[in-house]
Amino acid sequence: MLTDLGERSGDIALQCSETAGFLGELTRRIQADSAHLGELQSTMEALAVSQNESVLAAQELSLTARRAGQIIAQGHEAIGRSLGQITELIENVTGLEGHLRQFLDVIETVGDISGQLGAIARQTRLLGVNAAIEAARGGEATQGFAVVADEIRRLAGQAGESAASVGDKLGQLDRDARQLIGGVEANILRGREVGSHIDTLRVSMAEIASLVTQFGDRSETIVTCTDEADGDVAALRQGLARFSQSATESATRVETARGHLEGLEGMANAMLNRAAHSGHVTRNSRYIALAEEGAEEIQALIERALAEGELDMGSLFDTAYRPLPGSDPMQYENGFTAFADRCVQPLLDRRTAQDSAIVGCCLIDMNGYLPTHISARSQPQRPGQTRWNMEHARNRQIFMDSQTRRALDGDGDFFLFTYRQDLGEGRYRALRSVFVPLMFSGRRWGLYEVGYLI
Image (cartoon, rainbow, N blue to C red; front, side, top):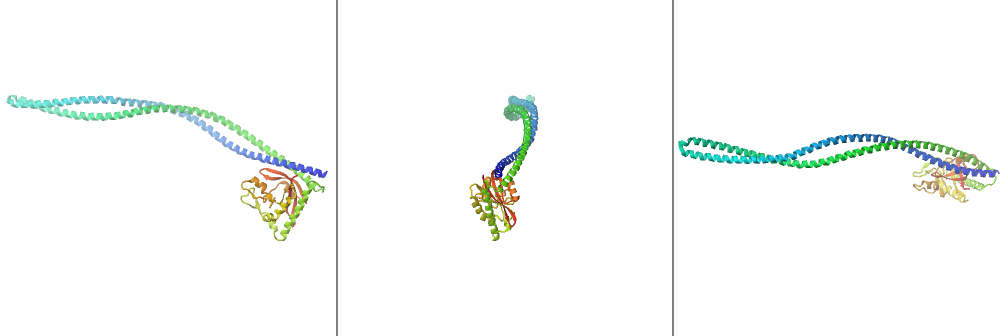
């Protein structure tokens, strides 16, 4: 009955171990999710700040749009008046061309009159000359007529000079007027181009006013949307806070349940171990015997190496673990590693091959360090493949769990426990293991372990 009770306790311990492993993984996932949720909450806080800034910016944008609309309306009115004045000015300049051309006609008419006056002056001068000649012929009787003839010639000369001067001035005036007309015509052409630009400017101003109106409408829509989004962000923040609190409480409860299961597992393992020491034959007896034989062989091997000087106590108990750069998970070396790989590993391989249910045999020092392992679990690590390394490169790593710690600290010739083998990334495998203490020169070194599946 005691044996059967022990076996049932072992089964309970196995189930507790598997369940505790599941709960441990669940706790890690909840904690990871909580961490991600914390990051999300931080992001939401930043989003909330940005949202508040967006609301303020949208409100300022709306005010700016209204102000811009007012400015554009005032500017449009002022520009309209200015454009009207410019248009009137262009029309006046354009009308000036007709007046200037009429002025040219007057100048030409005056020029013709001046020419006629010049001809009359020449004829009058000729008449004066003829009169003087006739007066000379008449003698004293025509002496008074000669004086008149001289005066006529003098006046005719002055009239000719005046007509010539007027003609010169009229010619200069005609040239200046024509130059002015040329400039006016050029300005008229420019004025017509400006007129077309003014029409385009009127259309552009109308389009700008329309765009500003649309901008104002859109900015009001943006303000409405940002106000609604602000409420949504606040609700989301509250929901995340409640969810975070719930996740934290769930993780705490799961961790508490896992702790209770581990306590139950410990009690079941204690009953399993007590039943194994009762002396009755159970399905664990074969593996207990194999573990004791293996420990005895390991003990003899290391003691012989110590006696022959192949190994010293300092190297055997070396705890200055040196990390191996680039290893993942981290591996370490100490003074015992090289000897263990060379001399202990072949023994572990041979002992593991004794039974198909045996998963592996290994050595564990007081800190959970495995200086070597069976060949199948001592493969070179693969860069970037942590999961593979955790399962196939278990040598030179440090492992510790509650059952191993109990076996390391406990007093007894062996310990039979169920425990979870860590396979990395939250993966576990429930094993039953026999731990046999290893002593050298009266000093506890660690354990020899035989792990097997039931």
